[in-house]
Amino acid sequence: MKKIRYSQFAAMNMIYNKYSFGYFLDSMERLQIKNFELWTGAPHISPITESLRVTGGVRREVQKRGMHIVCVTPEQVMYPYNIAAPDRKLRDASLAYFRENIHMTAELGADKMLCCAGWGNYDEDPGEAWKRSVDGLWQMVETARKDGVMLAFEILNRTESNLVYDFATTKKMMEAISDPLLGLCVDTVPVRLEGNTLEDYFAEFGKRICHVHLTDGDPMGHVPCGKGTHPVREHLKALETYDYTGYITLEIGDTSESERPEEATAFGFATVRNYVNQ
Image 1 (cartoon, rainbow, N blue to C red):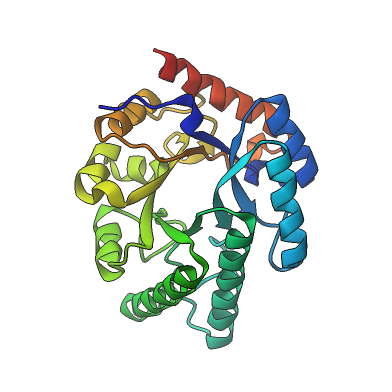
Image 2 (cartoon, rainbow, N blue to C red):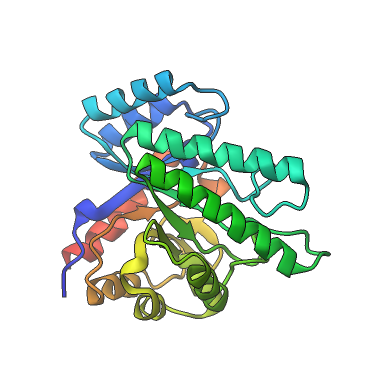
């Protein structure tokens, strides 16, 4: 059984979205955090507004500061980014957006990009939306293959998707996309919402789990670890039981933390440092 190392934890810039990207990088230096997951949304770096030349500049700046992008995460839980959208133009535009994000991931020197199933209209046949999602993911896998990038497929919750939101639907999708370039990102919020544990997921998916979002809530919320009711210590023990060696992003998304993102990030890292040291 391998102990979880503090160096496996990563921050995320999403909660800093009311601040500039430069402020986020400065904050990481103040907190002495080297790893971060890059959310590609405005006003930070985004394939909608930035060229690959600008992306290369970001890569150099991150490297100059001795930092490491562990995963690139495009905005994708709200319109207009939905690979399962019933509207053909919207779906095509969404797939083009994700292709650009895959190219950006490669240009940034990151090896993983996070993706999701999208969602269908809740008043349509979910089987049709499922087909569109699977087809879209296969298209993304082929783009990722050309660019040398791995996709980390994330389970969502029922308020975000009617396609993949629990253990059974996650298993169905992982069986549908049986390619080594599609791994699994497990987020502890939907796991907790369903009443399951990280051990349940590792027992089933094993090494296909390539990324983890460790967060807290009641059980929803995505607040810093230590501020909710999630069994953070038990989550970490499960990772150790299954010898998990990948990165663990402390994903903070609750808007109540958006005015003081550095304070929220520091709180979450102090919580896991205490658990890891014990």
